[in-house]
Image 1 (cartoon, rainbow, N blue to C red):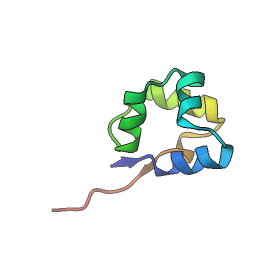
Image 2: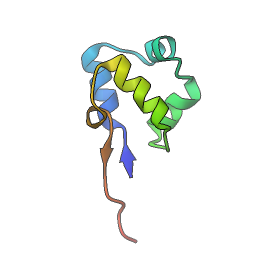
Image 3: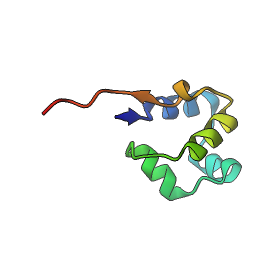
Image 4: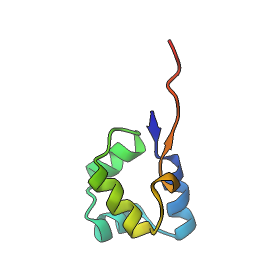
Length: 69
């Protein structure tokens, strides 16, 4: 599973709010909710996030193996 925990840490470090993401990136509140829930994201959205935060994809997302059931 891909998790976006690093995104929230990086945003806090850079002083960027979700409001600013919506205004600077054009990311809507539905997408913000999907990021918080670690739902699937379009690469277009990830590209926008990396551009506005001046970071690499690994700075905002991390792969965590699913627990085997």
